[in-house]
Image (cartoon, rainbow, N blue to C red; front, side, top):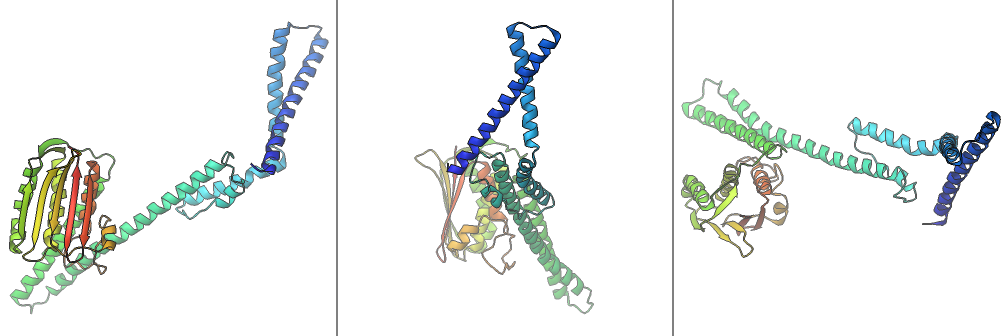
Length: 355
C-alpha cells in the first residue's frame, strides 16, 4: 500500500471519528439542555441509552450530509455513470465494452466498493460476447448446410419441368432430389439431437447391459457398407457389462463406425476391441487404416459443423455434427474420448468408460 493510499484511509477514518464525536457531543449537549429545561434528570443507565441512540441518529445525519457534498457525489458518479452506461449497452446487445480504465482509477484496490462490480461487468460482457460469436457462427453454419441441398433440390426440380428429358435423366434428377432431401432430414435430426443433449433438462436412462453385445449388433448392422468395400473387420470384445443409456451409446458407436467405414479405402481394415484396464476402466478402441487426419484437423474434430475439407464439399456426405454428438454423449456419461491419427496411416479412437 503506497503513501497516498494510506493518507486516504487515514483521512477517511478521521472523518468518521470526527462525525462520531460531533454526534455524541451534540447529543450530550442537547439532552443536558432538555433535562435542565424540564427540571428532571433520569437515572444514569436510561440517560446513557438516550445519549447513545441520539448520538447514532445525529451521526447518521452528519454522514448523510457528508455524502451529499458535491465533491463526494461527483466521485461516486465518476464510477456509477460508466457502470450504468455499460449495462445499457449490454441490454442493447453491444458486448464490446471495457471498464478497465475506471478499474485502474481505483489504484488497483480490490476492496474498493465498485471494484468487484466493474470486474463482474467486464467478465459478463466477455462471456456474452463469446456466446454471441458462437451463436452467429452457428447460424452461419446451419444456413450454409441448409442452403446447399435446397439449391440442388430447387435446381433439379426446375430441370424436371423440361419435357425433353429422357427417362434415365429424369430418374437421375429424382434420385438427387431424394438424396438431398434425406440429407436435409438428417441435418434437422442431428440439430434436434444436439440441442436435446445440451439441454439442462435431459436425464439419462441408465441401465445395465452388455456392451460387447451392443457393439456386435451395430457392426453387423453396418455389414452392407463394409462388405461392399471389402473391409476386413477385426473384432476382439471382452464380456463387458456397463451402466449407461443404451440408446445414446448406440449413437456413439454408429457415428464412430460410420466415419471409419466412410474414410477407410477398399480392402482396408477396421479393428474394434474392448478391454478392462488396471484402473478398472472399460475401454473401447476403434482403429482403421483410413486416410487419417493432420494435427490441425484433430484440434477441431469435435466442433460443430467442422469438416476437414475447407471447401465443405458435400460429396462425402455428413454435416459435421456426428462427432459433436459423440463428444457430448461421452461427457454426459463422464467418460473420455481420445483420437490419434496420422495422414495416410489411419485413425485410432479410444473411448474410456467407468463401470
